[in-house]
Length: 202
Image (cartoon, rainbow, N blue to C red):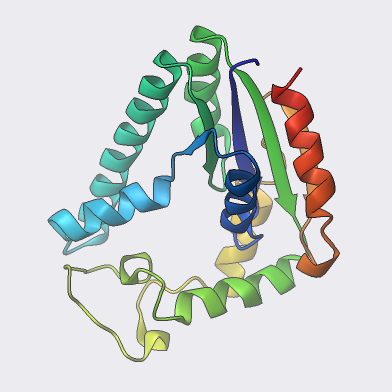
């Protein structure tokens, strides 16, 4: 079995985490590396009082992310990771996969920006969503009952701008499987899981 890394890419709110969970259920030999989890851990550990401090913690999380990826590659582990990847991450991931002889498969989930924004907003307003994503000042234990008052909520215009101009819809490293996530009920997850299996079992 070849060494491989799956990257769940594409627009925000397209069900990348759900897809990861399905893959892990079917192929438990994969190890997940989740940048959002690392970022949230940094927010809880250090807290932040400004956008600048928040950004510094995010950069620390990215450094840890690449360190974990490299460690797993050194150990020839199967890797899966989800994020709205762009060219910002492509160079480093390409470098690491080339260095350790990894085959990369990008699963790029796209869809209607209007529908995805609605999903994104519902997710942000849910109390299960880490508050650090929504505010410019955060310390562990902070609570906001009315999340519509958060000062970093993503507006529709910002969401659309990111989708169109950050290259989420064009990111590809290695092989590509593209999925229309406009309607989750119409996604053929079984076929995607079969396609995935064919890559690393060759």
